[in-house]
Image 1 (cartoon, one colour):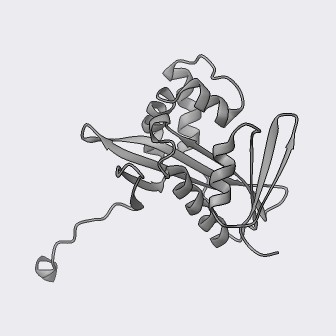
Image 2 (cartoon, rainbow, N blue to C red):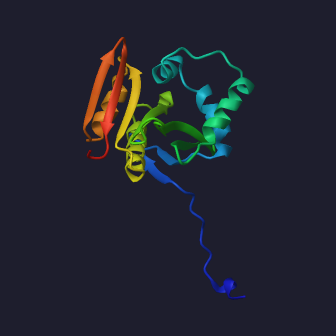
Image 3 (tube, rainbow, N blue to C red):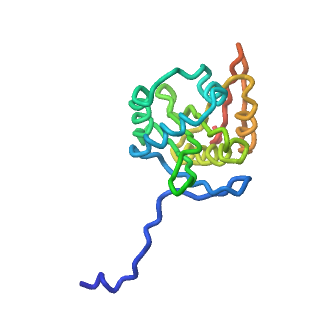
Length: 188
């Protein structure tokens, strides 16, 4: 009965809103199972070079229906072992994915987690990757993860630059064309 006197509160969507270097608005939040369609669109809009930089292999020729089960799995993360963030922007009145970031706790070493970033080509160089990595580092700290590591191609200088911009201690080892970047997020 007394509820009708309470002010109406506009429900905020979870996540944060930020501006890119080109002043575009991007919303970053935890991924949800319903985001599989956004991921399908994201993977369909990245170049072969971006795909290769992220996965260290050429993109496989797959139809949307072939790719769908993997994207549903990616959107349905286990919150105890993973953190997956999606960055979205509004295009033509609807949200589209422009970035994806994930950390997955190492089962053999719970103090470590692997991280990965994927930024749509037309949003690269605008700070989206840096913001996503900063948020992943914060999520790692909250979970007691001490080290983040990323395996990249040796020529992926953007990933090394983004890691250095965090301002945390990093180490990198290069062998056979691949670089492993280790970021210390908590003191030993």
